Image 1 (cartoon, helix red, strand yellow):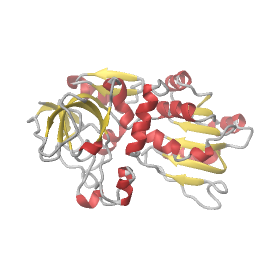
Image 2 (cartoon, helix red, strand yellow):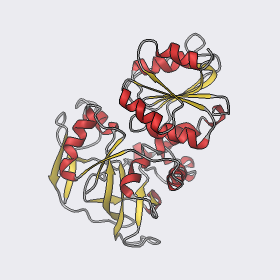
Image 3 (tube, helix red, strand yellow):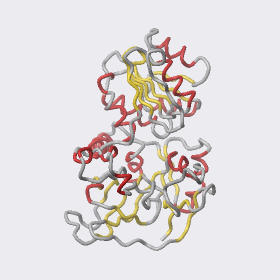
Length: 344
């Protein structure tokens, strides 16, 4: 089968021919109907050799959807041909966090060698993908897999970050969304769907700010000198009750600190490598700083339900497998509006 793999440190993705995988006991093989590209893929492909721990060759794609193609021994309750989205952050399935569906915070996954598809395990950027357990499949129903697949990360990750800050999303409150690309433009929609806060979108790209306005942002601010002053003016000098940084580089983290209100939440979602020192003389009084990761199985179900109502959607650019390398190039250079999806 065709697959998009990272095969050599520093050389980026390649389209290759590999053997079609067979499901083992308890596993499921999906015929992939859609796979999403993510900046996290480039994060790991940009790592130097001494920091890269994901194994080679690595089939990319931690956002995946498909139809059941073949069942391993012992799998019950699934039918060949049924469509599913893949829940990506796999855990041990037995600990306290996993029992709550929060496998994204499983404390034992690393020591047990359990890794997400596309981030250690073979991912969905291929014609077929193996899913390790039925609990990691969420029914798609009549949702379009191409329009929906990005929600497994680009929807789930902002949803988790936002619902974790729900107490700060009160009427009259203000939420600042820094970075309105793949995750951020979905975050704007989630905020509008589940709260009554005023949403301020921030980005360096005028095109992405136009997209933020299209999907519901009340105000937009160009990131850079003067951005903090503009946001303070929009909040009557008080700052934002919640700040969501979907970039995570040092300048955006510094901006998040500057515009956060007293007793606010700052959630750093992007993995740009910036650091926010916290303490009495750094962050506002009472402000809480978190770095949320991905989301729970239950939250993925809720995100897909929001998609069914039309409250949340992803702006998608479609590519086939042979175009995947070009899609990754465009993603790397900030040329994707919304989210890129490969359709085998």
